[in-house]
Length: 253
Image (cartoon, helix red, strand yellow):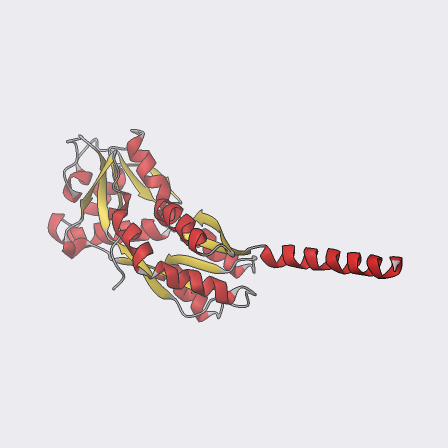
């Protein structure tokens, strides 16, 4: 009898451990472009609330930094970055088929209430302190594309004049708004999604703009492919899209 009770006790112990393990949520490691930080900080808790068996472990950084993690075989499940970053990963078989999640347009960022800069052209005015992305960063490349396009209207030396006013460059897109907010720069080229209580995002004229879509994809070989894809599907749904719109993102084209 004692032996039978001991067996039952051991079995109950094993079953309790198994139940506890089964109840542990799946941790989905996601890499997200830093420009999506504020919006994702709202979206992720909503997803976790409706999906109690899943937890999103988010890492935010510039696209080139995140791509390097995928390239190196880091233990990650999904990535959300711009097309210029994700498509090379797709070409190397590092990620699955990317899908559009949200988009943004270029904008001139200025402190709320400031009158020093009223538009793109003013970035070339003498004495204006400008912040830009580093030349090798996606947001820096977009900014230079804008300046090159604008040169058709403002003169071939427009980009050179703006670059002479650059006082700081940032590797991460999320570092650009704080440079304006803190007073380090009078203005910057950033995104429409950078608008906030402290910063006004003046849209770049359509002919000079760069419409950028953030795409998400499941990382190849992850054991969490199904839950990662479920989260990506959620990002494309109405609840998440409403939050992205609130944060001044456009719907993907």
